[in-house]
Amino acid sequence: MIVTLLTDYGRDDDFVGVCHGVIRTIHPEAQIVDITHGVRRYAVRQGALVLRNTLPYMPVGVHVAVVDPQVGTERRALALRTFDGRILVGPDNGLLSLAWERCGGVDLAVDVTRSPHRLEPVSATFHGRDIFAPVAAHLARGAELADAGDQLDDAELQTVELPEPYGEDGTLVAHTLVVDRFGNAALNVDHDDMAGTQITLGGTVEIEVGGERYLATYAQTFADVRPGELIVYEDAYRTLAVAINRGDAAATLGLRPDAEVRLRPR
Image 1 (cartoon, rainbow, N blue to C red):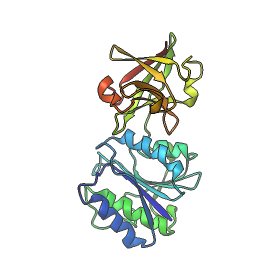
Image 2: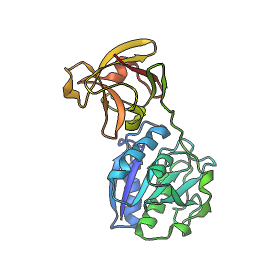
Image 3: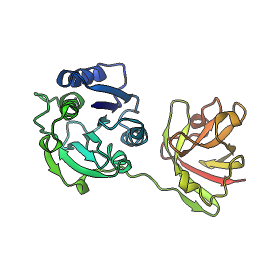
Image 4: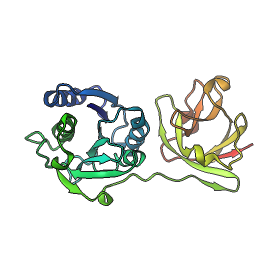
């Protein structure tokens, strides 16, 4: 069975390689897919969004996510099965919540903090190695989820809450959720939220951020405008985003996570 990994570990240290080694030691036939290890440090919401967006493109399997600023505290370690058959493993800090919603909800959840599958002794600071990786490996190898820990009420699990866009006097008020390495900023606006906004493909959109106003084109792709020009577009995950063709929209407009972005047709 496939095991996917998503973390904020980066690639400069040994963390990712050690997690691979633990999984392969327990389950030598495991197929490991690294979704990313480039989530911004401690950015639980960013990790939750990336996990939600990418899981539909992964085979059903065991999916490990570790963005864990509370490692070593009383926060629980979690493994759960969704109604579409995926198993998610990670800290109970909301990191898994957007993914389980996308995958149909929680069928069974267990607390694996003291799982019989964990490595001993358990480090206070590297639960990726000592809890999440070995638990995931055993589950991928065929161990029963119910035997991996103590059952939890899914209503008690921590969740990530996203801001909701809203309309105000002909303006769509949105917020930046994540910024990628190109400086493209994804907003909390999905395809259905665009209904009734009067923002039409090929039209001009006024963007207001921090009191400054900019003009952009509502386009399908970057090549629809000249280099250096702003676009508003629907990204690969059907989320509204702001970009500059061959430029950095986040730096130019000051689009950091949670920044308010006001959009209106012109």
